Structure formats: structure tokens, C-alpha cells
Amino acid sequence: MLRIAFAGTPEFAAAALDALAGAGHEIALVLTQPDRPAGRGKALQQSPVKRLALSLGLEVWQPATLRDPDAWRRLAEARLDAMVVAAYGLILPAQVLAIPRLGCLNIHASLLPRWRGAAPIQRAIEAGDTETGITIMQMDEGLDTGPMLSRVATPILPEDTGGSLHDRLASLGARAIVDALAGLEAGRLAPAPQPADGATYARKLGRADAALDFALGARALVDRIRAFDPVPGSVATIERDDGPVPVKFWRAQAAGGPAGTGQSGTGQSGAVPGTVLRADADGLLIACGDGAIAATELQKPGGKRLACGDFLRGFPIRAGERFVPPATT
Image (tube, rainbow, N blue to C red; front, side, top):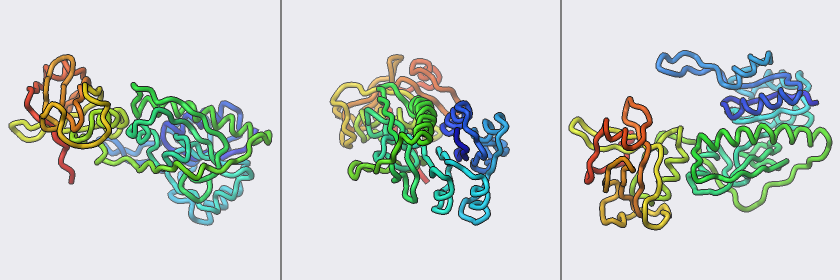
């Protein structure tokens, strides 16, 4: 078994830490982001990795940066065989990458070089990809550019959301890092450079990603709704007497017309994109730039996610009304 440090912060990383502890590796140190204020009361919240590490009796370290000599010294004194990194949130400088005997290994939630960057799970669904996976790579100073030790693929199912795919990839990544460390320890794994072609960048999610623009094609809209469930969600507004009301869209399917290409334009029905064509228990049929979508699960402000029929009973919508993207500031 190896003596390792683990660096990670969210639930995705906690799954890997739990697997490494279960595999019997000596976890000398767990690095995670500092506690952050969260919730309505803005109380300090521990990261999922910190909570798990403390429950396992592991030493936790929450540095604000790894760019100072004191941090390098602490890691060097740990006499590490390897450092495992998963959605940590801090950049590892060259001085840190050089410390562990076997290097620093990253668990990345895509099949590199596709979707390097911060949000590979959501961007893969948004783009309409049918496959993704986990890459275990040896870290270098670039952004997810290091040589690969292993890749494990999984299909993106038509019903997958950002949440469901996240959970599946977290489990896959946990198994993959345990296997990779075993292979490294036995001398069975050799790093291979990433392919020169096919690199794409998965930019970080932001509030602007939540805005639904019905000028897009039906397929593109459905994929965005799936990708951004649960975070950041997908929102459009509809006009009411007291002003525009934001409505969250959680489930939808393309309804008629070609499976949208993502191009914008005028809906096939001739209606302006965003116009409600039908509103009943079967779904809210809304014109898009290419075809229409049938929204089947929605949420009003302060409410719960509801099937369309239940939603319409508490928030009536009529054919002819129109959804538009929310105003951004």
C-alpha cells in the first residue's frame, strides 16, 4: 500500500477518498478548501471531503494557497508516494507536483483531451455527447494536459442529467483511482501522452448558463435542461401583472420536427420562439427556433419541482403566452 495525500473538496472527490481509505492506503494528509459561508444564515460549512476525512480520523489541512515555501515543506515532510487530486479548487505549482515519489494524479470527469476544465460533466451533456468517462492522469503545469494513466468510458444515457451523470462518474472515478494506484505500485502502468487532436474546454458554470433562450433548437434546449439539473438550473420568465416571473424547467423532451441542431431561428409552427402552443397535463408545449419542446417538470418561485399538470393547477399558463430569457445584470 502507498502513503498518499489527498486533495479534493466536493462530493465527487469524497467518493474517491472513501474508496482509497477502504483500499487500505495510508492517507497521511487530506487537503480541502477552507470552510465557506453557505445557506440563508451564512454559517461556515465544511466541505464534503473535510466531513468524511474527520469521520475517518484523518488529518485535515485547509491552506489558502499552495504557492508558498511553508506549504511545500509540509508536503515534503509527509514523505509521500503519491498525491491524488479530485476537484480540489487550488492550482498545484511545479514545486508541489515534484514532491511525491510517483507524482500527483488527477481524477478528471471526461475522456481527455475532450472537456478539459472545470465543468466537463455538464458540458458533455449540453453538447449532446453520447459518451464520457474518467481519465486518471499524471498532473503537469497545464490545464488537464498531463499524460494519461487510464481511461474508463461510460455512455451518456438519454435520461441522464448533470446530477445523475455526476454520481455515476464519481463512483467510476473512485474505482479507477484505486486501480491506477495498484497498477503504479506494481509497475504495470506507464503514462501515455494525450492525443494531439480533439481537445475542448469545459468552461466553469455561471449564472448566465441558467438562462433558457427558446431561439435555440429543441434538441439543444433539452440537452441544456438536462445538463444544468440540478446546478445552475434552467430558467425562463413569463409575464404576469406584477412583472416577469422566473420559472425553472427541470424536464423536457423534443416534440416534433428534426432533433434540433442548436441553430436559432423561427419555430416550425410559425410561432415566435418561446410562445406557449399548448398547456395541459401532458406538458407545456413551447415553440423553439427549431421545432418545439414539451416541458414536463417545472418549478415556480418558492415552490417545489412538480409534474406539469400539478404545476399548472397552481400556476396557470395559457396558449399564446410567451417565455423569454431572464434579464441579466
